[in-house]
Amino acid sequence: MNHIQSADKQYVANTYNRFPVTIVSGKGSEVYDENGKRYIDMGSGIGVTAMGIADDQWVAAVTEQLGKVQHMSNLYYTEPCAKLAELLCTRTGMSKVFFANSGAEANECAIKVARKYAAEHKGEDCYTIVTLEKSFHGRTLTTLAATGQDHFHKLFHPLTPGFVHTPANDFEAFKTTVETVGTDKVAGIMLECVQGEGGVIALDKDFVVSVAEYAKAHDIILIIDEVQTGNGRTGALYAYMNFGITPDVVSTAKGLGGGLPLGATLMSEKVQDVLGFGDHGSTFGGNPIACAGAVSVIGRIDEAFLADVRAKSEYVFSALEGAEGVESVSGMGLMIGIKTVKPAGEVLKACMDKGVLCLTAKDKVRLLPALNIPMDVLKEAVEIIKAACKA
Ligand SMILES: *Cc1c(COP(=O)(O)O)cnc(C)c1O
Image (tube, rainbow, N blue to C red):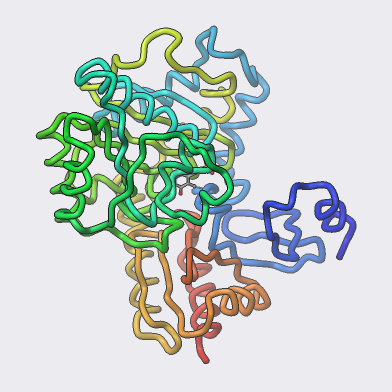
């Protein structure tokens, strides 16, 4: 263990079980450790470095803003924040954006919007938010309450009240859950179109469409958590676009800033004026450097770029489906889960030895490469992953 690793182990809180790898530099989808060993990065910092490491355009956008002004607080206007909000709204048809610094915060804002809308339109006892089992919405006490996985909750009670969970892809169960609370007491429904941390599971289109119709019919705010699925990850700008639904609120983060902390909550016309002066805020939210990087990321995700993401996705699915040691492949776009015969951790370790960094999600190997990973680098990684899956 080198000094970096021993100091980190001694002084950084024990919340992360890090791999014994220290990354010192990189370019695109290739990173290097302190000994110069090369790795292909198939995790992109958990779907964050959407355009890869030290991407030239992103670095230029960020450093240009860094030399102008790095922060002014939300008491003043800055150009990147306004530009990014305009770009996100014109590309999605949403009406307003609130900027935060992380996925959990983007979800906190989404929940506040749903609760305030409900309090004003349906009464102050209408506050319950329905989420799905196996969902993941963040680590704050409210987004933990939203997260439908009990093991994250243990020993952190009491969590924020007013959350109930229902199984994914079971519309009858969903209706029962809502009606047990009372349709006039449910403020919002929050879901990931592709559950990420829950095991890279794409929801059934019928289920998502039925939930969206039900929400609309009962004036329940539909929140789509696009923290992981957003910003081109699934081959659409936002995953909900693959499902043909129109959410009331969309939260996103991870890939949005391309590597700088940035979260966003997009609000449709229906809820655009729910939050007024003083209702919500963030000191760092909409930071000009983070937003300048995001403009560089989102500005490049056009139809041609998304078609390329889908083509790479098809390649990975066809290369891995039916391969020796692979039970199944799930997900959408470049958000891919591999159920392996061997334990996922073993496959991960074998890949790391051979110079490929992967992730896991539950019992699966999870791939979230940079969206612009070159095809030859992707092929090299997939060959190594395939070999690692073999018995
Ligand atoms: C990662 C993630 C979050 C939490 O984001 P943070 O930036 O870690 O707060 C929330 N929802 C989903 C779907 C995620 O994948």
